[in-house]
Image (cartoon, rainbow, N blue to C red; front, side):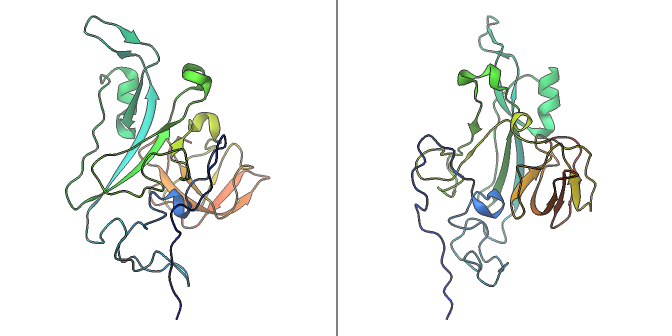
Amino acid sequence: MRQRTRVAWPLLRPHIGLRPPFSPNGHSGAPWLGENIGQSATAPVDPYANRPDALCPSSSPLRHYNIVVIMLPVQLTSSGTVDPNGMIFSLAQDKTAFLSGAKHAEPLAIRGNIGGCIAVTPASEQRDARVFGEHAKVNLHIHHVQFDTRASDGVITGMSYEQSVRPYQAEDPQLALDARVGDTSVKVTGAAKFHPGAFIGVGLGTESIEILKIGSIDTQTNTITFDPAFRNGVIGGG
């Protein structure tokens, strides 16, 4: 009889002074519990298959929130005091309106219903030169919902996976060409940092972000091939 087991908590050692690794399985927010209750096996040995105690029931509606951290002047007081290096969390679809001044900076509320599931993809457009310590990182913690302490709690210290993000414009290669629905590859400004089997976000900072698994890499042409293909297509972004 083959036994299905999941990683124990904590799995990692303390990573003092070092950046911890991101969680596996597409940088999932639930590497310990598993994402979906009763999900089918994806490999001969799959510790997350057919689990009754994962995060999201199969019958629950799923809401996606693509969130971008942006910097813009934010008014602090009614008398007009402004922080020129203000920062807000914005839905990707509202980013342009905030940056242009068409919408005023306001707190972001993520909403869900009892029994529903929420999937959040964060990205950052902070600028190192304008934050304390000149090294921008940002993360999220959501109260009053069930989450996986290993990777959706917002923790970035101790023995947890990395749960904060660096500005993608400073940290990552950018798209050289837009990706269309059904495309299996994309050309980037540099592919040296990636490796086959890793999951990456394509279209960071946009509403059309997709999380895809790298199948192969051509470092001569900076082309990354994915499996499966793009579902939505990506225009712009990282």
